[in-house]
Image 1 (cartoon, rainbow, N blue to C red):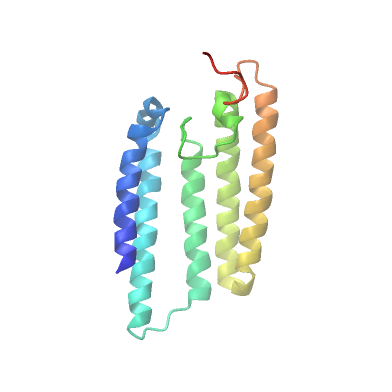
Image 2: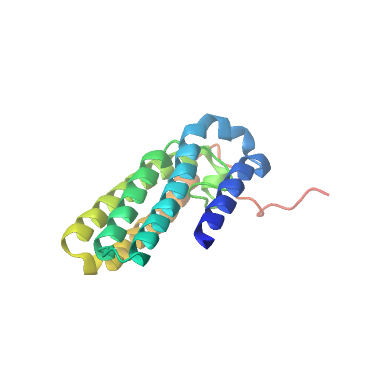
Length: 174
């Protein structure tokens, strides 16, 4: 019974986030992408609840196949909306460089979308054929992808003539 309560709390937190984000003006420009992520979280939690209830009622569930397939689907959906996100403080790839350069934000999120899609497809393939490898594939793909995206966001920021210094690196005005 805890999972539905967690889903309810997450739902309300995700409704609140656009109201408290310093970059809240941008949410209107990516509302469909944000709503997709919000609904995806709820659907995943609902699916986990359904599988848990089925398992508790004696249904045999092949979780070694189901988990990688679901994780793969999640990664593909997130990858598809990642490039549509606009600068904000809560959702997306938030490095000091993406938060201080629109160019770095846009290019890093577009590249990140591909990283997530490829990782998701690999997860689904591994889940279908070699399920015992799925954690290694997930860790390897996402670790390499995320590290690459961090470096990429810095490189794009470094070459952006319109960048601002990352937050917290300049003295505060008195």
